[in-house]
Length: 225
Image (cartoon, rainbow, N blue to C red):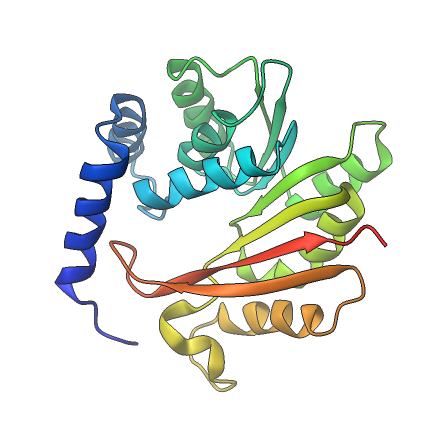
């Protein structure tokens, strides 16, 4: 694994200071997550704002998130929604979902966010069979082993022109190593392979460095032709 550079976090702090500022709601969310022993794998403050701006940019009204954890990214995304917007977030662990609901309620966003507990694959299949509106924006940040399967569901659940965002797709450079010891690399590589020359999605990936070390996001747009 590549070593982290302390300057990366310093630059993140600079970005937050100049472009985002203090956010007591998200700070409280992180503090609650830490008290309850959740893994500290939330997106960073700058990344959370990026997700919010991307969702605002596509004028998302219906958002799907795969992987709630303690609700940090759900809060960021829900802030992008119009008054009649709705976010569905899928979470495997009941205790994570319960804490996320508390954090989201504290943020004043309970009326916009629905958390569904259970295996994501089963929840996604149920969403496909429902009469819910198709989603405008989908953020995937759950078990990387199932990334390619999540892509298939995401496409079926999206409207044409929807944005898809997958987190943790560089893995400190390990993604280019087919023999990597990181157990999450094969699923990440399967996502790239599935999107190579995909007929329904135009995609790219961007490397990032910062307080979350060296990683990246994959972004795609569901084609409308």
